[in-house]
Length: 112
Length: 117
Image (tube, rainbow over all chains, first blue to last red; front, side, top):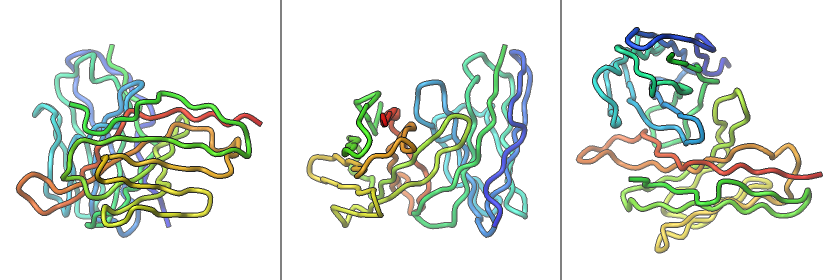
């Protein structure tokens, strides 16, 4: 059974650029959630996708957008990057139920 | 507003002793609670969970206690081992406002646990 994988591991961008982060969910999981973890903080919910539809969104501006594909993998896109977007971005997959989510190792994004 | 709070940024215990990590929440719509452990350069790893219909759940060395009236939960690790040294996050899950779906985890800030040999 393959766990949650994310790519790339690290990324450096400059302010104003756009970035795409990728996530492959754990086998059999149809729900993907994205979280942003700033230094010294707990992860914050960005949004969730279930069967290719957005299924809830946290307090993040529209320049944060996402996609889920038929194989349940997912992308997080961030436009017009700001310095405060520097963080660890975590992807988690789960079954459609109120149960534990399984996290990937994250993508460390640095915005200069 | 911080709906899930872990007020102790760090905790240091001796190997073999009990570690108690605490968590408070404010939102009474939360009905499922989880603890995650995180090592550097890795994603959070699920440890143990508890539904709001229970007040205790046990899994090996890990026990989670839930006090709904106080909106407080705690994680007990007995006995503590050096390999338990990590950041521990408390997380809560509940229904979306006006909806029936689950899945949004609200995390606390984390507690750094250090277990000394």
